Image (cartoon, rainbow, N blue to C red):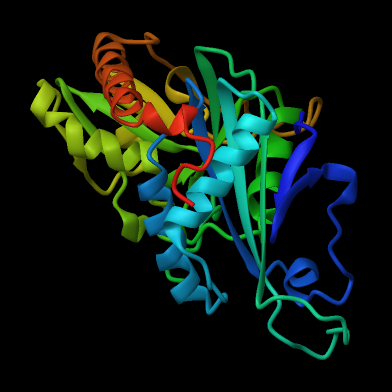
Length: 309
């Protein structure tokens, strides 16, 4: 549930006062960007990495981005404090207002900036996954950008949830594993952790990025590798990662969404894993330690009412 106070363009206000115009082309066409920051002990975790990805995606999508990192971070802290968030998450949206035929004559900024917070979603562990073909287009020039045009993700997730699964593993046009609808995916084989490379079409998730950076230094080798479904099915362990999940073990992967009951079609094969496995648990501990250290280094932001303005 979204908390009551939100930031829109120039101030923090109750959510019922936030207004977007029908003439804001980016709103209706999905021309915008977003990111979700984990709030831990009142601190936006890894904000600078989220910001770097936002800037890169803004350039790639030609989305106006007239913002400064320190100012926006300060605005996010204002919203966090206004809503009294200790543990939760914050969403940051940038919505383009570049003129199109459907623009209005209202005075609007080049891009709207919206920030709001919520509690953490409930995710169960272990998770059940199902594979879907043609879920990602790795050859698209916009592959891997985190944009507000999110229908492909929510549609695939909806169908997976309706079938009784927790997430959907998306394959690209080459039949390679890319990611899940809202999480990166990892497999463990003989003690080494593998995750699909960015050219699979997957999002450069922040948790994924950090696991690649810190794993080896803590004794767990995490590598990028092109993966096919058969690699996943033969893994020793499988887990997924995201801002709101951190690291979450997977105990079951079904080869594809099954046919309707009574259709006579052969049931899809199910592959089972111990979850969370020992390597998954070790990585989770490593990541939690990293978060604690980060929060300790940024603890001054929490009490500074004018921090980073």
